[in-house]
Length: 208
Ligand SMILES: Cc1ncc(COP(=O)(O)OP(=O)(O)O)c(N)n1
Ligand SMILES: Cc1ncsc1CCOP(=O)(O)O
Ligand SMILES: [Mg+2]
Image (cartoon, rainbow, N blue to C red; front, top):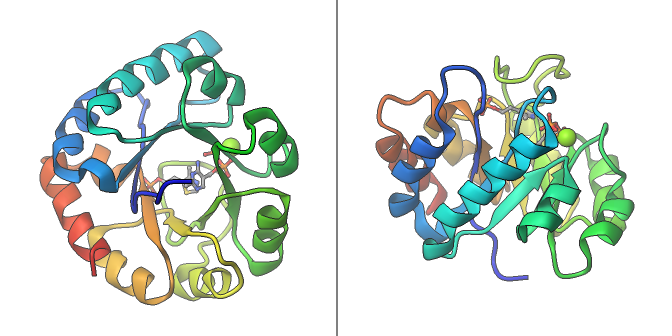
């Protein structure tokens, strides 16, 4: 697997958000440090997920930025995305690996060392670890694990740990010091007045 980007932009398809405009602003700034994860609301149709993934892939291609698809692995396969991301309500990691094949990037969600190790054994190539902080982006999340929770997982596995959940630029240095390889964000880019500048600020912490 080629080296993974440290800044994961997760698409925000909530009403009033413009994921493609945010992506257009961030791509020239983040370039190969970026990974884009296509995530749609559970109420979206497969057709909507597929169309968004195709548009994201077209924007990412000139920058050679990999695109992953959240949850819907058939959409990842159908669009030629680099891989996917699964969590507790999705296909089990081993099944996801079978679907995507050995070369794909496969992310799995974990919040503590035991599930993290199990996900890696089952074939995860990176882990999304959190929520680090409280966030309004997703309902029904368990309590935040904080920097200490990220440190516990990062110390237990050899794959990249991508911290997620309420992450801002100010959180990046302590997360990196705790062993996080990178961060995944929705609101820190999507809700920013200037997403390009917000990406620069996130990247500044990630390059240390
Ligand atoms: C990088 C990253 N980490 C965690 C998640 C969350 O996945 P999941 O727990 O399956 O929740 P949904 O995103 O599907 O609502 C993620 N998407 N990306
Ligand atoms: C999908 C997901 N899973 C855990 S936290 C989260 C949302 C992250 O969004 P934000 O960066 O806006 O907190
Ligand atoms: Mg999921």
